[in-house]
Length: 284
Image (cartoon, rainbow, N blue to C red; front, side, top):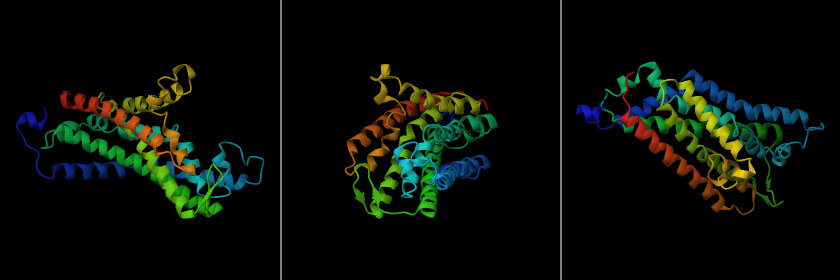
């Protein structure tokens, strides 16, 4: 039974305390630290590989902007996010979002939390915000380490865009900030999916796996031309639209479309998570 059904009223400031507690619990957890360190190692390892291989036949292979890293460390931000976005970021987000509610249930603490004067909707909101905070922290950590490693190994100079036009270093760094922000916002739909699955089970591993599978299946469906009609609405279809920041004139309409798709996924799965959680019979 929720506190509201027992007649308890949420105390003023209870949501803020709950949110701070959830943030501390997540970001001080050894597993979370390990996940963030693992993600941070990606741009560092990529920088080392490209630095060692820049004079070999490997230079220039892969996506075009990866070949540009050796000429300008700014491109390491894009290259690192490009490598992490298809699987590593969805996997880590699946782990944190899938554990949001199911982890408390498995540990036997969910029932205790619901005896406090905090409504179920507030508890769900706190868990969701914490999961979103992790997604943002993961993306910006990758970008920060990539910027530092890119500068250390290859230097930071004025940025040459896809059109061949050049923008000053300051503008280039601003564009990299935009890339990171867009990628972080593009993962909000996946967070909502993960939190929803987390309300369905008391086994966090199941919710984690299901969340990751949704991202992988979406990516696979996006490659099938027979399903072109549904491609614009798939969770992952617009993830790589951050390439717009490499054009002289950023098409904000394209980026806005991607954000609208994420908003739709958040609205649908956020509503499903709320409907499930506020009516669930919590026994653990």
